[in-house]
Length: 134
Image (cartoon, rainbow, N blue to C red; front, side, top):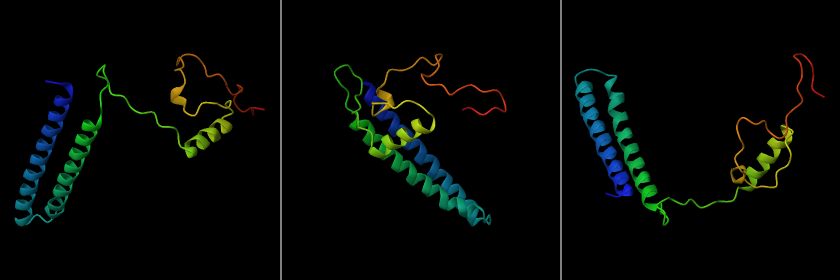
């Protein structure tokens, strides 16, 4: 069985399992509510809402799984989208606030990953407690 088929089968299994729980809980709460438990009326309304959310997520997960197109190596390619002008402006503002150098790249994800043990290229001056950095 292909990997994609397994994922789709898992999505359907989760859908059936979630809907079964919601339907069962709905009927349990209806029975309790008609028996005199007034709090159960709130649950009578909630369980169908949960069931609708499960339908929404099932539809969305299936659409996402079916739209993902694997390449010849079996991995899924995600198209690179350019950053929005608002995001570029926000990143420029953050660099200015933190005193970092300007970057010519539109996206930080396109740069080479930096070793987490090495310090950043621009560090603020170190001060002792109570001193103000100049």
